[in-house]
Image (cartoon, rainbow, N blue to C red):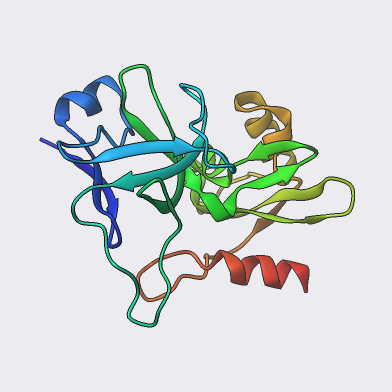
Length: 202
């Protein structure tokens, strides 16, 4: 019996996936509960077409008023940004595709690192992985992946590129893979991607 709840401190809950939802569509964040509205908007604040990825905005009776230090989240038509991007399936179920600020534009294509991370996490020989965008002189930005492989693995960069290319569009293949003994994390367990990007740039 598993429920998947998606939300944030600022907007409270946004969607709830029931056990039935998860059996039909594993990985879904569910549907908005009664009294909550979720819309997916583009960079100009317009609703995106069905099935397309957009910025997630939420409204309900529990939106926060602002941070104690001042400031708040972006609000459009009374809906507050969660900072995430996602899409709805044909059943109205929400899927989270990544963070709005993690999207990169590589050679004119929008790429969300999470999709590549999810694929690599599913590889039997990978223990841990992080994917992020880094500057690129030819394409503006490109993906880089940092991986921790399981003991005894024979994985190399060429093999991983071929694996991603076989499962995703070619422009989503990271241009480089960095093999590490472990990924840096903060006290709550979140991967420190900025540290990885800065160290790679250095």
